[in-house]
Amino acid sequence: MVSLCLGWLGPWLALAQQPIITLQPTNQFVNASGNAQFHVGVTGLAPLTYQWLLDGTPLAGATRFALSLTNVQPAQSGYYLVIVSNASGSITSQVAELKVFIAAPHSLSGIQAEPGGSVTLSFAGETTAPFAPYYDLYPLEASTNLVDWAPLATLQRSNTALNTLQFLDTNAPMFNQRFYRTPTNQLATPDPQPSGPYPVGTFSMLLTNINRNNAKFMVTFWYPAVAQARALPAKYEEPQVVDSEYDLAPYGGGDFDSQAQAFFSHSLSNAPLATNLAKYPVVLYDASLTGHRRENTDKVEDLASWGYIVVGLDTSDRPVSVFPNGTVVYGQTVAYTVVAIDADIEGRLLDLQFVLGGLESLNAGDPRLGGRLDLDKIGAFGWSLGGTTAAQLCLRDPRCKAGAGMDGTYFETNLQNMAGRAGRARCSK
Image (tube, rainbow, N blue to C red; front, side, top):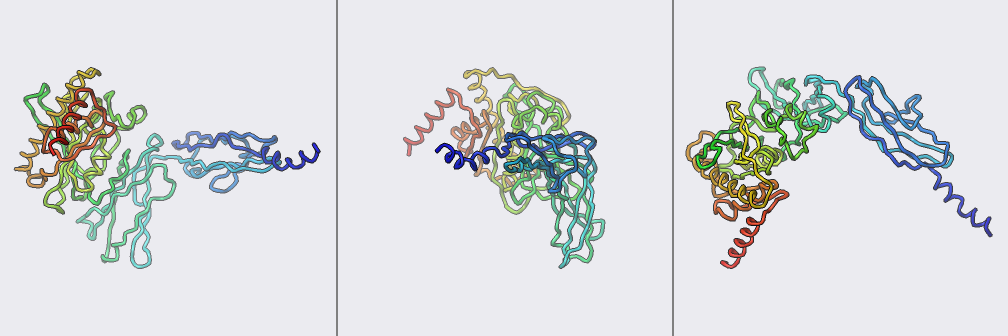
């Protein structure tokens, strides 16, 4: 009876003794001549055997639980996995990528005529391992005479990609001859490309409000634009802001900060405003308590790419700001108490309302924006404490027609104000 029971369980016991991977190999991103190591954790009936593969091909001598690679070179980039076996069976690990970086300027590395006259362009050049989590931009321009150039596309490449970056020019058959160029600059960016149909332009300006302690403050505009030849993306942030302890808060600080001075945005400085529409709706952006007007650049650029003019401002509590002449200024410190932050929200609200008044003046006579701001369609959004200010603006100022808060923080007095105003609005209907 007992013998029969063990015989019935035999296949299940053997299955339970097959290798089981408890720790998968992880991606490795290193500079050329550096070292990389993949390893795997396994349980199962001994003895266990290991075989590592690169792009599906077994590696000679790679038969241990760990694969150590020294003085790695770009040719070793690829996809690694390990097959673990014993007498009861085998199991294959997850695939892990090795990318070996060798810093090189951008270039056009190949051109190929395709059937029908289209042209495939190939690109080379890359950054270094610390920028592995981010992207690199390749602005591409075209000409028929090597004199007059026009933007063709801005390509974005993930820095961890192993394939060759390529672009297919389907318009090439329209021309007797076609020339191409791309800048050699490495243009690293932390953000994916905006999703809308417009290129994004940007400019900043200094405003003065005599009713606040630090009367002068910066505002930045992002807007739907017309791309131009030779125009490179604007820097992501001023170096002085990157160096501050409050810099680039949405990305968590830390190692990101050491690379941020090299980052570029997707916006083109002072590019002409697009003329597809007579007027564009306006959105104000208010930042977090320890943030700054560019802390959500990815979101404001995406809004601009869909036809919005976005305005970010440094309110009076901004930790650090940089004026156009390079002067660095520091905002007022706010105690983290309900009373202090409620008062700070009131100050922020006055700043936003001052900017709204400034927009009316710009719409009346600014050479870039004059007559193009749709002041009947104004919204506001903010992150953290800025979401509170956006809500207050829409509750108190009829010029604000819509608002949104991202991870909004609400404090006692303002929460009561919002509830009271909402109640009165409902009663008045």
